[in-house]
Amino acid sequence: MGPNRWEVLLSNATQALAFVDLETTGASATKDRITEIGIVLVDEDGVREWNQLVHPQTRIPLFIEQLTGISNEMVAEMPSFAQVAGEVAELLEGRLFIAHNARFDYGFLKNEFSRVGMTFRPQVLCTVKLSRALYPHFHRHNLDSLIERHGLQAKDRHRALADAQLIHQFWTQAYEQFSEETVDVAVQRLVGRSSLPSNIDPLLIHDLPEAPGVYLFYGENDLPLYIGKSVNIRNRVLAHFGADHKNNKEMSLAQQLRRIDWIETAGELGALLLEARLIKEKTPVHNQRLRRKSALCAWQLQQQGEQLKPVLSWAGELDFGAQDNLYGLYHSLRDAQKALRGVAEQHGLCLSVLGLEKTAAGRPCFGYQIKKCRGACVGTEAPLAHAARVLIAMQKLKLAVWPYPGAIGISEGEELHVIDRWCYLGTAKNEAEIAELLQAGVPAFDRDTYMLLSKSLKKAEVVVLPQALCVAG
Image 1 (cartoon, rainbow, N blue to C red):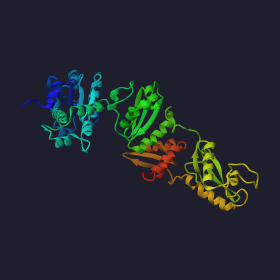
Image 2: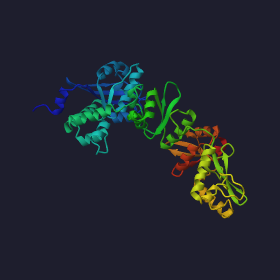
Image 3: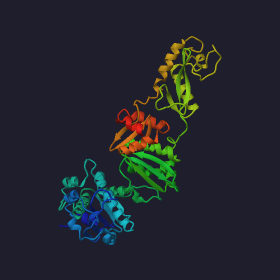
Image 4: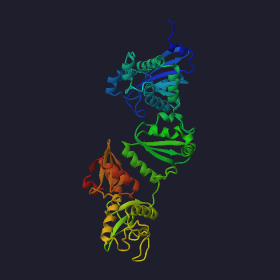
């Protein structure tokens, strides 16, 4: 029997490969440690394997022992990672690093190398993503699903070398089931998918979390250029630069970018609230929509005789979080008047009575002359009738009054977003943190936070905070 297509491809290969799997003491790459490394090395000379138990320099939890079969006794006399780091680096040098859920394995090795003062920067391919690209009609792409779907031969599941062998088997089958070009194109798209700007380490793509939160782009100093939010930080950051050559704003941002930071949140609401707060605090130059911190104003309807007249009130004069009889939220007199004029034109209200046009008593306003006013200015519409229409017309602009006696918490995951009078005080995980937020007091009323909360509160899981706690705060 002649060589199969994979063997032919292997003999002509120009890219050396390393199929890698690790066993660890837990899931945190910064806190937990490696207990075993398994590598399948593939190049023009063929396939060879390397496997090493590693002393993690910490205890292996019982449930990890039960999952992997690697006990504390088994690693007691094994070398530490520092002792094998040089050999591992030599084995992986110049090879495409291939792992299932590669962010996990790459993250652990990057941190272990960093602890011994070594830099680890391979090209990385995730076979979870490769499986999704090649088999999009399947819903599950974890290793157990691949074993079942493709009939992979698992000798010792949850041991490093055995799992690395499974990844290699999947890779081999992919080249048997698809054309070389199909697989190569999918691989190149995944390996080269990061279009991060040249000043950013391309391996940052593997550190970015696929979780909700806020990301911050920095230039040469500590003032952020841009702040954004997403339910998937990694995808959103990469989306900024996927087509930056087509967008002048993104191009400018890419050229200035030097550093990317992020803050994970429990969910989308936390990301939205944190984004609004950070943009107001740090005023990044590329955020235009949420940057404005100017004083807010709103219309109040005041009775003057038999008429209702809108009077502009400013946030510094009233408690916008609890004040009734407020309509609209604006950043300037001009914006407020423009909005009120629009309401008047839509409902045929009198500009003179509303105070938007100065006319002598008994003289018609301009709207009446062009038949857009029913004549409240000249007495052809009764004052009470016009007042009733003003009240109805303004209703859609009415600000909601804070519906609780004091501060509340909105549950999201294991966190509680503390809110009082439509103002975001912060996010807490326990009673002490809640009390600290309450003690800091209520910040200035913010239009963007109000708009966000007035929508979110309808479907949120609300916890009314005890009054004793609020008073103590």
